[in-house]
Image (cartoon, rainbow, N blue to C red; front, side, top):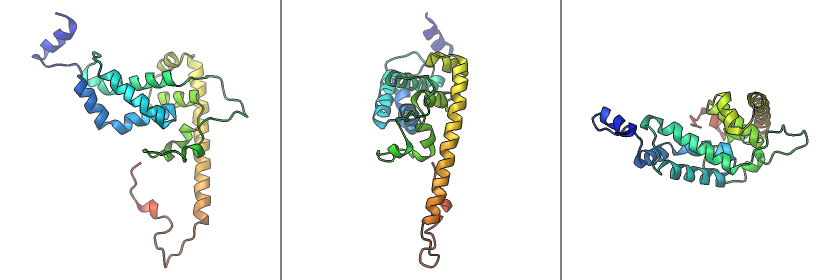
Amino acid sequence: MNSRHAHRAAKGGKNLYATSEDFCKLFKEDAQSLYLLSFLLTADHEKAERCFVKGLDACIEGNSVFQEWTNSWARRIIVSNALRMISLDPSPPSPGRRVSHSAGDLTSQRLPLPDAPFAGVLSLPDFDRFVYVLSLLEAYADQNCAVLLGVSHREVRETRRRAVQQVALSEKRAAARDVHVHDELPCDGAKQPEACGGLVDNNLDF
């Protein structure tokens, strides 16, 4: 009896391994979270869709994964797909180097997800963005990040620090723009009681 069947027998025949149906259910119920991971890594909706679909295909091909690991396994597959799609350059960006994905560029795309909260992350250079997403959002250990990205622990730490600073700066600039736009909007309390600040009172779930 191999180890897989032994695990089944230990639970009275119950299959402890995830089936293709389990992964299909996961990708359906957690589609937004998994797609968001794909998008934050690729910073491109077309690539994110391919990354997501390939992730589902890979998960249902019969990998022996415990049921309780389905979510982490699916996310790991998506990370692997994104790494194959994006060529990463760990070199720090030069001062005059333009990031390929700016927050302004993103507004011209059809966005099925609320990108505004992630504009700072999406504006990072590819390598910095991968480090930020894996290290901070996915909580990968520095060692795991270093192995996946093929760099040293020190490069991971330095890149993370640089990325955090850049995201904070982007968010600060975005906040300043929002204040400027808000100050320029006409607000007639008599005719438009909710014209200004109306969104603040709405419980928008981003």
